[in-house]
Amino acid sequence: MERKPLRLLVVLPSWVGDVVMATPALRLLRSHLTGSLIGGLMRPGLDELLAGSDLIDQYHVDRARGVMGPKLVAAKLRPQRYESALLLTNSFSTALITRLAFIPERIGYDRDGRGLLLTRTIRPRMRPAAAAPPSGAKPGVLSGLLSSRHFAPVSAVDYYLCAARVLLSAAVDADACESPLPGEPSPRLELGVSPEQEEQAARVLNEAGVDASARYAVLNPGANNPAKRWPAERFIELGRVLARDRGLRVLVSGSPNERELVESIADGIDTGPPARALTRFGLTLGALKGIVRGASLMVTNDTGPRHIAAAFGVPTVALFGPTDPRWTTLPGSDKRYRTVVADPSLPPDEVADDHPERCRIDRIGLETVVEAVREVTGDGWV
Image (tube, rainbow, N blue to C red):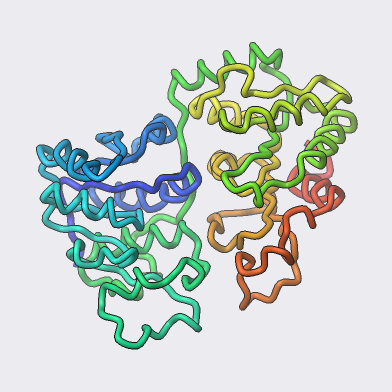
């Protein structure tokens, strides 16, 4: 039995890559809730990521800071009179916001001890050793007692789609929602670029001295966790190969707090056409979308721009160290996309996160990455 709330609030994840991986779930909601208003609660900056798409009708850009944060955010939401809230987050605070906003129906994963704040809960998939509840655990408390290493490595794309299916159909078993709904579109990542963001991208490229007709590669050497960063000197060597052997302009991107890393790598690529650090030219998330969309190649650690490139179908090589790629398996990955892991011999019943030494990202060699680049760009090497 399909359900159609007329006013739905989606509480979006906090990270860039996770929001991109939530777009198939947002498209599923949009395709089934024709005529409904879909609002999105997101942290500042993520509205820029979703700009240029039709996935969200109303943006609520806010962040709950401090003890009073959830109450203040809820007070802003309350006048919107949302009928349902779908939480794609796992935090206690976001569940509290929707409860304090008096949203009657609140659906999300039973994690971080927040089950009592939700009206319908979904139990996340667990690894076999963690499937049985601890002795004496109460319903709704189990997930709060478990650390992240107990959860099965399920792609965030599927994780968010499951939640959307539970909201859309009362007939879906909240503990078994892996099957698509009737008429569900095939999952794919999708992003748009607004006219303003196209102008921003063109400005950054122009200031970086990159002609509109130039072929360029984007290197993304940062990550929120330093353990996920492929060594800077290997990014430099890769950039030299791309510039010297393929005549590509090399652009190096990163967040403002990665500026030193980004600029040191760009300055180190001293062969062929000059490399450019995009952080020197007022790079914004919106401009990055436009730049990535026009790239011939991206080589990246496991971080947000990887998902942006995948959403635009850009040939991409993604490097994984001590994080398991199954957490972020992307739909529709084809010959233009390659995942390179530090230890391809790790048994499938093991999770890379549990083996930080065996799966150190510096175990990935330069030649392995160069070969992956050849594979995603074809015999013509872009």
